[in-house]
Image 1 (tube, rainbow, N blue to C red):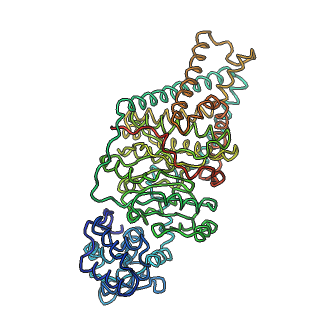
Image 2 (cartoon, rainbow, N blue to C red):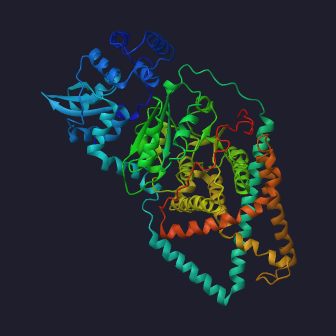
Length: 637
């Protein structure tokens, strides 16, 4: 087993005093003498350094005060060390294996070669080298520092360790909690067996089949409606009981926050994304934005290069691999992140400007068990057509009413795929994202709960683009539902272990959320078939006892009342109040979900890891306007 240097593995935050005053003074003087730094920028950088206790190099680069080449040359002069290009002069691969390629990426260290009994360690951060030196000495014996450029360090690592980094990105989640060993053949055999059983029952006992399907559909309808109503009541009670907005705490030193934005074939939105993220008010020197792009995605790379990106953003290229999925890209890019808080945005996102600060303050207020914060997702094009209106209503009810209620009820919540923020320590303990799960967000929400962590909803809004064309909507929803099926199956491999980890209450909630949701989509035609009775037509269960018939009618009416009420509450804010008259039309919207469920079930058997890509950037009518006014009121808890 490769040695694991504890200090290198566990440390993620930059200490308060990282640069010796003499060295920082020399660095600034050299840059100034060489004409690489103006007097105004010098004073500004020193003021930021004194006030925020950040690395001078990060301040200078983030604000574009100096070029990376000028800074590297000045640092070499200050520290009196060599600058080495590991691309032209490749490192010893065995030395990298000793430290670990992922540690090299995260800590900007590259064991290069051995000379005269000493191992030369390349770094891009000379002021932090002493911090790592004891562990490096323990691994390699005497070490000597040399400098290199960040892009050269990354290129040299990839040239020799691309397969290893790819494998790590695909297998970061422990095998027992991943779907990567999913086998379609047993699922196919089970599907065939169920199909044959249904056919036999249809031919020889249609009443029995109808009773089984209708009974399960009615039971899951009752459970999901009850859970939704309970969540809504819990959330409304919390708003009434804790109406005050807590003052944000004073934080002596704001942490570095890394934001990963996976992009794949996003030529329509790349330039708009940069403009939206530029509206974030969090200090630039403490914001680390990574545009994560697949190596083979030449179009997105070209779109980013054409418009350029600010110094506080950077592109991380994900090496080509057999699975081009969002969670795989996130796992790979995680090693590049500098922050102690890790955030996720999608390509078309338009977050509230103060969102990052609110995330930092909430994490500061909460203990380490709150490992994840989920923002509210909304749509900036609800007026495009009827489908976009219904999608907006659905999202408003889910993110403003149902999810906050479930969280306050202590249940595990299936996360959304964006506006997610994690404590880095927690996400590393969990092993990142399951690279093979097409709803890695929902899966991660359950894994958080299994390992004793909590996720909370944060009342800050990110605008997205509503998928408002029928066929793309079905494709997107089929991926989500297929992922729900796979997530349930993976976590139910060992029901006893899951029950022990979650407890009875959260285990029950998990079953209702996943099995209930899937059953309602898959068995929706069974429930719709009862309309035949109202038309005087034949139905297999048309001769059920009258009390049972009326009880079922009452359940249908109550469940629809719950749906209408929750959806209306979701869009009751000033921004979306115009959608209230459209709430009853969701009865005509959800049949699309049944089609998506059948497509997802078919793909679960035929191509479980297929990622049906959603195209963004088609409807931009109001993308510049964050939807803050209709967020639920923050309250003390």
